[in-house]
Image (tube, rainbow, N blue to C red):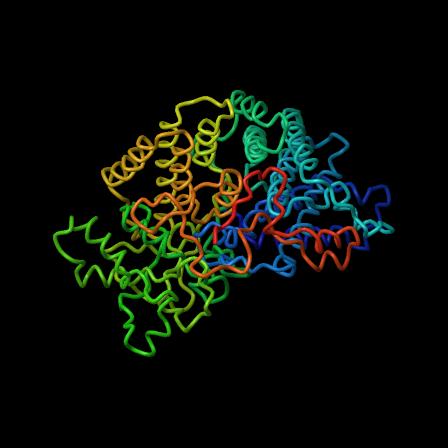
Length: 571
């Protein structure tokens, strides 16, 4: 389910749609609230983009919550932090609602089924982020005379509704439709593809909510037993960006920031890069691009002001260099000058370092070929500062993948839900499929990418299987699996944020090779772990029903309905 959708198509579609509603249109027998099939094909791409953006908008901050990136990782969130996320969701999802309105006559069931899947996926993400939200009355505001005091529905009730919506979508998608679906950049108009995605979205909803629903485990087991969801890499639900720059930039957002200086250029956290180095992770040169080979000198006043807070970074950190010496030289020699130059390129920050950003843009490690569509950065590749508009950017957002589903099943097995299967075999398959996707995307983005050898992949996978075998209980094994999900979630922050809230894993731990936990914030954060996003103040000003949520719901105290763990830092 990959697409090569360009934003120019969106722009053209919107223009065409506006033109179709011109005041010169005199066909008074045409209901303007029931768009024709032609209008449906114009609405569909914008509806699909709206649904995928429901997760993409918070990927960076969710990765920060989980300790992958420096975004929002000090949890100093306010009621003004997500005004844009909230507004964008409700504005853009209007297109999905328009498709549903236009198809309630039963003449376009495939379009209707697609819209149902998109709605279930997007609304599910929104509930996972905020909890209670406007839902049943949410998209009536554009009708003249509609009261702006839209009610908030309970998160658990919304989940029940969108789970049923997935089942309804399967029914609709099985019906015949006279006109073929057009402009479908996700499923290419295939009812079979959308049926599989409907079942996959339902499985994901049941999986996330299993601890918050009375029949959660039984329903999840039934969904796994029924099958029909994504199982192979060829079926992955991903958003594929292009290299297009004009008329609108369609390159990956994580590419646009550091490579062009027009967006997000946040730090990557040291633990992620450091452990991947020590673990000989085959994904390392694809995940990160090194901009420098120079090591900052702590005795130099200028350099000292640029060294990340905490006194040192990877090439100067004694504990890290000791581990490096043990792993790569079996304690027979110290890291070489070439080693230190290589390590200097992994310039990031420790978790929760909010001490201000010096002029280090030309030093920071940046997103690489995966998932951003940037540059490959193997040890043999000289570090190079990024300047100007570079080619590339054709990366992906991995939305729901075959390896996600396998990790779900492993978690469900180990967490005693009644779901069955060979957890260890699924764990291995998930790791291999994720690594394969990383390599495939990277090779398309940067032809210099060098695929890891089969031995390198097998050695890495076997090391994790050894850790899995050494864990003495199912919960200990789940903790190991959760740490691997953490490594796999680079570019997919929502998934690991959800997992940490569902399970409390991976638990905190020291910074060392194969550390099971995650580094706690280096500075005591002003707030606890983010259990949800704070409600937008802007909504509270417009909707009286939102005011109590803005005032009384605390993001680090009040979890969404399915979160029974209430993950917290211990200070």
